[in-house]
Image (cartoon, rainbow, N blue to C red; front, side, top):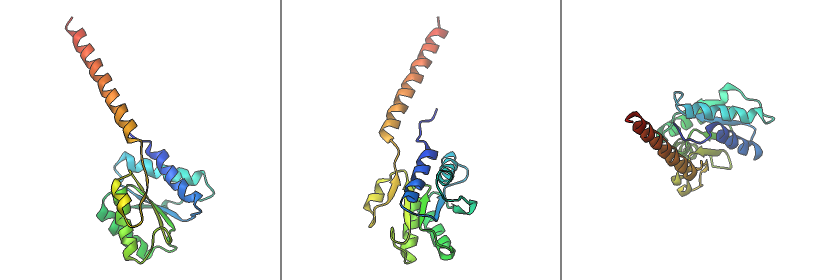
Length: 167
């Protein structure tokens, strides 16, 4: 059993936020291709394009990873050659976004004037940056409560099954 956010829907909302802000060239720095979260977030990014006037293209998905270092390295590499340069980026997670922010700053680009960046996960460190990170935040307290209730239900069911087996 898994209790999780709706990664697809939340990624769609992140991209729609940027579209609603007037961005027309948005890319997604994707997480590891072997994780369901990453795949769902890519699909959510695509969904936003389907529900807008923008046209999706596979080259808008940039394989990036999940760490500060990967966000920094991919940001340096990608923005050194991107033509035209995107005006906005959604990131697999906040760590990737923070690494990207460092690469953008070193490249002489400002956030949000030159490039808007949206992270994912709501890591508290994002609030301590020079420009606070815009991030997608799940309902962590609700997920925690749901997980506890589910565990208690499973434990109760297992206990009942165990007692029935000994009758």
